[in-house]
Length: 318
Image 1 (tube, one colour):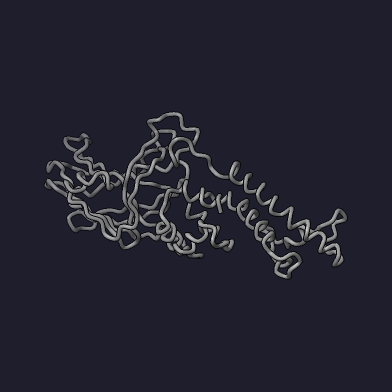
Image 2: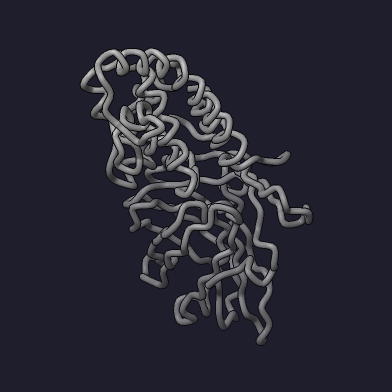
């Protein structure tokens, strides 16, 4: 339970957010009461619940088998020695755990009743110790170790690649709205959105002054370098001759949609330059108010500290 609590602390999310992430992913649900009982040590979780919890905490999939093996060993240690349930529990590779515990040097997986009792007694002592040892291995080798900033890879040496910013997110059907200023003689406008691609496949439609204009296309998830600046070019016929543009983003993806910063660039006399900027988040309510920012269906608002990719040319995507 302690290691799961550590993963929860590292993820820096609420129980509500974990429940929402699990609902978006489908499969095993994560009710907040179940998670609270598990973290408090009042309830031993089912394996599927533990895996869903770890995925909600953004533990990489390649690390999950080690957690499952640790769960199996702890589960067996809690069962009455020699019970039918004990013999029926299978490991991640499909081998009965009781057979693994009782396998002799000759390879025999069945033992006489007396040998079974003796082996079960030894297992009752040995398995918890093995579980503790494996848990330490999981904690030390499989869990990503963070440096001073949560979510930042240890090998990042250029501090300019690390950014702390607060933002907001909303699920499918939710939306955000804001108004920006541009030069009316523009021949083009583009939106640049800072987002967390630790949540992959975010998809949203864009309208300009009520007219369908473009789309934030889905980007693949990156669990290491999570910041990206996504660029969308708006149709010139919707921006030329206008001083203000009201933008509405409507999420159409099950993974939701997050936003931290919008930079608006316009093209005037053939040159692109910054026309406006709106910073999203609870710490930037003045910027939100100045741009009449509104959000519908918000399900997350917090601060994240992440890194951009090592090569600056990979910071921006279309």
